Image 1 (cartoon, helix red, strand yellow):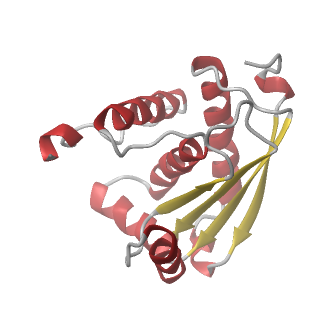
Image 2: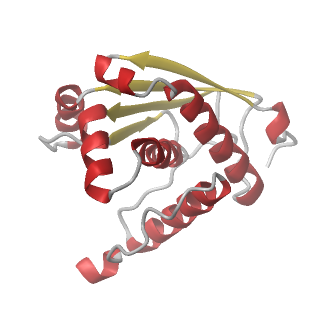
Amino acid sequence: MSGFDAQTITLDKDLLIESDLWQALPDLETLIERAFAAGLNHVMAEEGIAFLPECELSLVFTDDASIRTLNREHRGKDSATNVLSFPIDEDADPFGPMLGDIVFAYETVERESAEMGVEIRNHLTHLCLHGFLHLLGYDHIEPDEADKMESVEVAILARLGLPNPYAGTVPLEILD
């Protein structure tokens, strides 16, 4: 790890709000700042991940139609999803200056929040962390990778005083 600490790292977030639906969250920027600050501090302190002193990521807040197109073009899945991440270099060491892009779809995030019975702000915080970890090379395709990624997400959410979003869900290996 480089000699930089969390206080010397600047994580700039370039926000593009493509859908007016996101106006339903007037504190969106505050929520984002809190989520990414907690994520950055955790992965540096607990996971030993290094970053260049100045890093940037792009955040796009869109709708289901737009994310469906991206999901079809980039993942071959013709459906809307909650979040997509596009890392610049998920194997970088240290990470930066550009980490990548994260795209969120309002309708899916809102629907999932209602279905899970959680506040949309809490769900979006989780998805910010989930997308951020994808930019850093975390994945959930294999069960051991999923366990690791979920444990990091849960630890960061706990630091923020938020509950475990995976509590009561079926482990991936049971679904195989």
